Image (cartoon, rainbow, N blue to C red):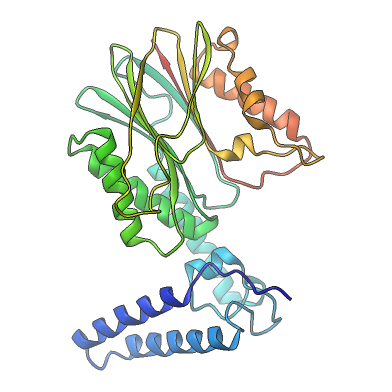
Length: 324
């Protein structure tokens, strides 16, 4: 049997133990901290024995997102006690409400642009990131995708949201915003976690600057057709000193920018074929565009018609901006 791939590494557990020991040096004789250290030691023993990540009742793998959220978990969700299940459900609903509160204003019109977005997580909590922010007369926009799914990805998404907004407020150049966001993400996240991000600054005169960190291509639809703007750097968090580049263009009234996560282009038909970027480009043919919301509706309609009976398996986010 192949070894189970786990969302938590031995290094992650050792880092957690070191932090607990540091806390214990300050709060001596704290039984809760001592108990947590014992639980970490037990998890390390299970990892050495090859049983870490397996439910102690059914011996089946514990759900990845649950294990990532609670690296000390010993039981799968099915074998939690009723009280534990109720607490988990309550926590997930609260996390979903908090995440919904982080989403930008729907239908925002600012700096000579009108916008719309769709945010549809595959589970209660998602790992996609969507943001619109007006600062100093400019419209900042972003769509991202954190590696992983569920609660752990949602927590990192919230972290990315706070980081991006804090850096925008400092009036930094766009490439510097990505550099600092990547460094913070790299230094504060668990190993092997990263995020792709497509973001930009839209100005009233139609000038737009883009920075794309390992994300799906941004599409720009204008009178001459649809332009693909590809990645200008690696995903955030892969390397702490990664540098990023920007690219720019000028848009005329009626031109549209479309950002999306791979939950759209990688949606599969019943036969397993992916929706793909070419079908998406057909959806946003300049002659078919009426408004940002209309653009999103057309994309979703085509994708759902292609997917048919297949259920959504990945988080889905689409953001459209139209120059007015």
